Structures are given as structure tokens and as C-alpha cells.
Picture 1 (cartoon, rainbow, N blue to C red):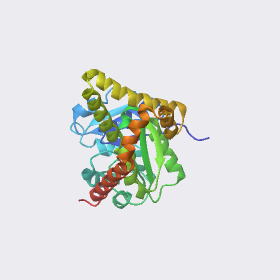
Picture 2 (picture 1 turned 90 degrees about the horizontal axis):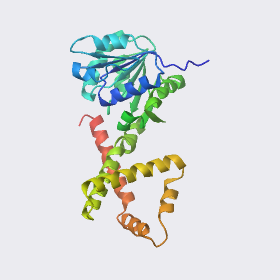
Picture 3 (picture 1 turned 90 degrees about the vertical axis):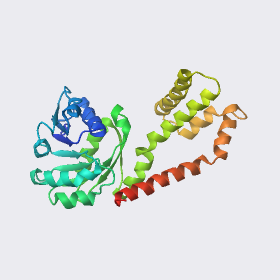
Length: 278
């Protein structure tokens, strides 16, 4: 019988993303223990009091990363990308054989992790997005060279505590980041601009924001509840020769598809520059 519980987990550098994952796993009750580290006591305090979770500040306990990594079967690396190599060098000697190390760091390759950590450690690379903070993430997950199906399934279960998971080869992680990683910002921009359009039509700031935000939230909820294809839901709103059809025609005439293609291509180019150290 497969153990439904996740093994002990350490999250080194539990900032906004690592903290969201820690909260999600803790809330699910699916782990036999979570230890998270942060540099400052103030940051560590934001995770205090959560059942099943120990939050430790490096300023009070300088060896916290080593202690946490030594006691975990899954270690998530959540520090800033530039800090990753030094952290890996520090924890490599204390990792037990078979430990699974998961990257949360954008632009740091599996090859970098495997080179520093050496044999005996399993590496996966992940790319969650910010809705992890409300349990609605999309996380891209790529296996390293020694990760087998059981390793991937275990880490998948961890990330499913904060949303959905898409398994991809590592060479698709950067492309995924341009869709699900950056995607929330695209939608926030859309809400900003829709709010401005409402303001220009004479609505109060409060009403304009309410209409724009709740329309997007409601549309997303409808999509989730019905399971319909987005194109079908759009057609249901778009009556022939009606007002919505006229508005959609303006957006299509502006080549919205090409604009999104260019935007995601630009994000992908920048991701590759960052990976190359540019």
C-alpha cells in the first residue's frame, strides 16, 4: 500500500512562494513534518503557529539550513537564484542518499543542481506561480536525470496541495513560465485596463474596480464550474449582431492572438538571457 503521507520536508528560503507551499502542505495535513528557514526573525515569524510546521530564522540559528536539510527527505530550494550555488554547496554534505531536492529558483538548471550536489541525490525543477498563495497555483515540474516516476509522483503530490501540476521536460520550463508563471500579471493588467475603461465611462473608482475584478473572477468561476471550452463560453456571451460581437471584433482586428504571441516570446527570450547569466 502506498503511504499517503508525504515524508519530512525542508523549505530553505521560505519567501512568498516557499511560504505559500509550506502553508499549503501544512493545511493539507499530508506531511510528517515541515521545517522552513528564513534569514530574518521577522520573516520567520510570519509562519509561526502553523500546525505541523517549524519556522526557523538564520539570524538566530546560523546552522538552520544544514539542520533542516539533514532531517528532510524532500528539500525545496527557495532562495534567490544568485544564492542557490552557495546554498547547495553548504547543504550537499548533510543530504542523505536518496534525498529529493526540488528547485523553486527561476533560471537555475537541473545540471547546476546535479553538478553541485553530486551522486545519490535526486533533483527536480519546479516553476509554481503566485496563485499558490491561495491554493490555485499552476506548477510546472521537470525531472532531473535520476528522478524516476515514483520521485515525480511524490513531488507532484506535494505541489498539488497548492494547485494543479503540469509535468514537462526541462527544456519547456521557461516556455511554461511565460504562460502560467507570467500569466497572472497579464490578467492583472487586463483588469487594470478594463477598470480604466469603466472610469472613462463615468463610473466611480469603487464601482469600476468592482465591475472589472468581479467580472474576471466570475468568468473564471464559470469556466471552472462548467468545464466548457473557453471558446464555447465566449460564443454563448456573443449574440449575433449584438454589442459583445462588436467589441470582440475590435479585439480581433487588433490581432490579440499575435500580441499575446509576441508578449510570451519576449518573456521567453528574457528567461533564456537570465539562464545564461545576462
